[in-house]
Amino acid sequence: MARAPVIDADGHILERQEDVRKYLEPPWDKRRGGLWEGSYPWDTELRGTLTNHDYRDGGLEPERQVDTWLRIADRENMETVVLFPTGSGHVAYIPEPEWAVAVCRAVNTHFANDYGSRSPRLRPVGVLPMQDPQAAADELRHAVTELGLVSFEILSQGLSVGLGDRSYDPLYAEAERLGVPLCIHGTRSKLEEVGGDQFKTFAEVHTYVFPASITLHFTSIMANGVLERFPRLKLAFLEIGATWLPYWLDRLDEHWELRGEHEMPHVSKRPTDVFREHEVYVSVEPEETLLPQVIEHIGDGHFLFASDVPHWDARFPENLEFLESREDIPAESLRKIVYDNAKRLFGL
Image (tube, rainbow, N blue to C red):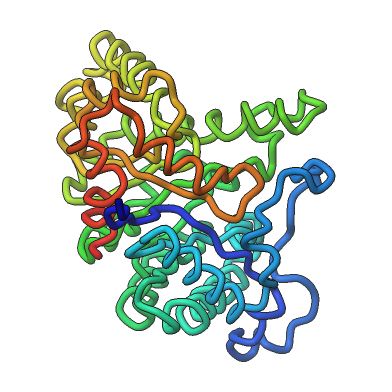
């Protein structure tokens, strides 16, 4: 039986700095050196044993990445693939605000011209100069209205203050006005920011740093009433699964009940209820043991399927096949996870 259509809410581009550099505007096009720093070179692919050959064998030139993604989409009946950055999220660490703006503009133009324009099935996600929230709002507006990008990645590290801080309000206001989601995406780039420098193996770092950095900003957003101050804002928290949600919301609920009047004045009800009532999404890991209970507890309108291709831990298409075969999740909920919710989130 043919698979029903799928929307991949989080695939990836492996962007190269040489392709981005072509789009730097004057006077920045005369600047030498790298565009952004990388992170510590862990052996993520474990001496070549953990790699996505289906993707890598196609090469990294943009046109070949596009061809590879369209081949994958045809084979797996993907109606749309939402393509996130891989390296350019590191613009968060650029200390020069004006240079960060220039690099973000070049990245977003590269994604729009070399990926988004090639096929309506490929919808790239941009990056923002979060060093200056007003500049980030301006770039968001430009990239949406002029380039057609559907969302923006905010890495969970590299920010000077939690995402619930009022300084980000100009960005949230513009994203809400344009109906464009902001996606807080897990990373392990600067692992020392959340204590990951105490580990000596990549397994420890990757297990801990992603959820530690994501839940930091989730706490900040929920405790500072961002969703109530911007009720039409759409947010997603990606690449740490979904079964952490009840635990973390329970902790927030407890502190709201005991201290909310004084320290969460913009949160008018339990954070669990705020989450349920707003457009907030998380991507699932198909093998999560307690996923059915979490879906029932939170409501099935908040969950997304993400292939994570071509990253080392992207067990695709096996993860999609496993999710679709789960008999402990109702068929209607599965349909929302693999298609409906992403269609709504990204306005497809």
